Image: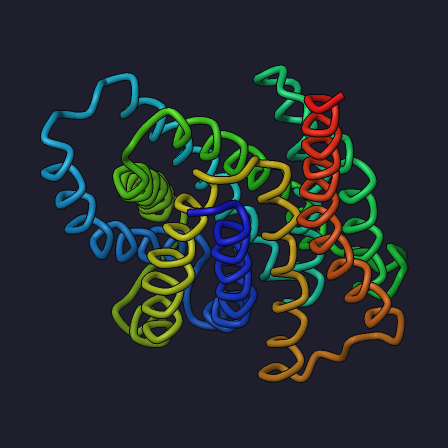
Length: 303
């Protein structure tokens, strides 16, 4: 898979996540956030498990304990991101949640440097700021009416950034993208269900009331989109992945308007253009610079 193809895969994952915001928000009318996250990722783990087992058989050797521990660590970050996002959706809009979650576009390169001393291509910094400005404009260009749910969404962005960085780091060293996916889903589900049993009431009626949302988010937003994320990240860097995944703010806004009647402010269209420009720049500029360097090297060989 080429880097361009990988980034398109990540863009598809972002589109699916954008649609998932609507289901996540409407589910809160019937069920608590811990039960929703636990059931969502239990379904995702069960859906992914057969493919992970086929992957295991194809490789013909057991996974190392080190790999399993790394995959669980990704699952812990996934749990932090999923549950803080879900709690936030109780008191904020789909539009705000999708925009504030996109703050991970700035957190990812910073965390990459802190954890792995891995500096991104220089173009990432101005492009990340461009994407951040676009996200800000999508929300109307003001922070005056921030809610508790908005603050939860900012915390969520930090956890998502950690998940993106860790998933990219570990999958680059392991031939088991489906194994990573199934393990992170199971880890997240077990933690969420344990806390749900302790903190939230549950009934069959509550599960039935949110069943369509649980199935959609479990199979599509989780089971499919997170697998696409892991596969795509094998062929691109975490900061580049963050730029493309941040387009979920665009899709979240679109689906929020389509299904929930949320309106995009006038400045939001400028924000859309900035995010789209950011995705083009992060893809095109490094490639142009690479071709230019290669052209100079070839020219030097003939002088």
